[in-house]
Length: 377
Image (cartoon, rainbow, N blue to C red; front, side, top):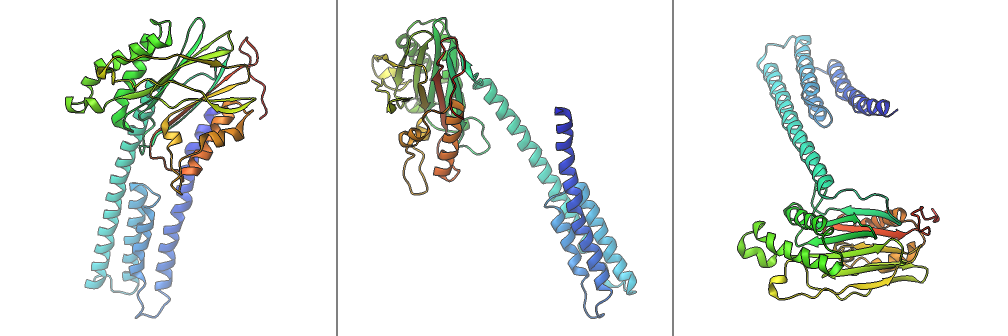
C-alpha cells in the first residue's frame, strides 16, 4: 500500500507537468495559425516568445528546451510560409527566439541546481533535528507526552529551543530550555546542554544536584563555542521537571525559565517557582537551586514552554495570552492540546514567529499502570 502511494506521488507531479505543457504548445499552434489568417501587415510571430517564458514557471531544462525548439521552428515556418524566411528581419527574429530560449534553459538549470542544494540542506536539518532532539515517545511511564517545536529561522527545523527526557527507576525527568539567540547559530549551545543533561541525569539523584552539574558543564564548555569577548552573553534558561511514577506530585527546578502551567479540574494556574540564574552565569557567584514540589494528580496536565510562546506578538503588537487560551482547552489530551496551541499561536502571529518556540504537554494517566487517559476527542 505504501509503495503504491509513493509511486502515485511520483506520477502526479509528472502528470501535472504534462498537463501544463499543453499550454505553451497550444499557444505556439494558435499564434502560428492566426498569424497566417490576419492581414499581411499584422505580425503576431513576436508573441511566440511567450511560450518559453511561461514554460520556465513549471518545467525543467529539458521541457523548456523542447518548447524553445518548437518556438524557433514555428517562427521559421511562418517565415517560410510568407516566403520571407531568408530576410534580415525574420532571421533576426529566429535568432532572438533562440537566444531567449537558451536563456530560459540556463535559468532552469540554475534553478534546479539551487533546488537540489536546498533539498540537501533540508535533509541535513531534519537529520540534525532527529539526532539532537530525539523524538519523545507518546507515553513515558504513567505520563502522556506531546511536543510542539516551531523554529523561527527560515528553512530551519531546529533553533535555540531544546528539550530532552530520560526515564529513571522512580519516574521520568524532562528538560526544556532556551539558549540565547535563535536559529542555526544556537544549535551548538543547544547540543551542549542536551548532551550534558543526558549524561548528568544518571549520575545525580536530585534535581538541585542535576542543575548544578548542568551549570558546571555549560560554563566549562561555552568558551569553546564563542570568542572570549562574547562569553558573557552566552547563557541558557532551563526548566527541569521530575515526575515520580507512584506519587501524585511533581518536582521542578527553574534556571531562569518561565514557570509551567498546571491544567487541572480546578482550572489553569502558573506553578510557583523560585528561579535561579540561567545556566552559564555561575561564574558570577555561587548559585542555590530550589526544588519546588506541587500536586500532579492523575488527569492533570503540565504545560512546559519557552519564552518564544508567551512573547510571540500578534498583528496588534500584543503578546500571546497563553494562560487565557489554555483555559479554553482543559480536558483535552496532550496531543489535542498541542494541536490547538499550534494553530492558535500561528493565527495570533500571522504565521511568522520572531523567536523559536517549544511546548511539551505532560498528562499523568488516570491509571497508575500507564494506561492511556480517556479524554474527550
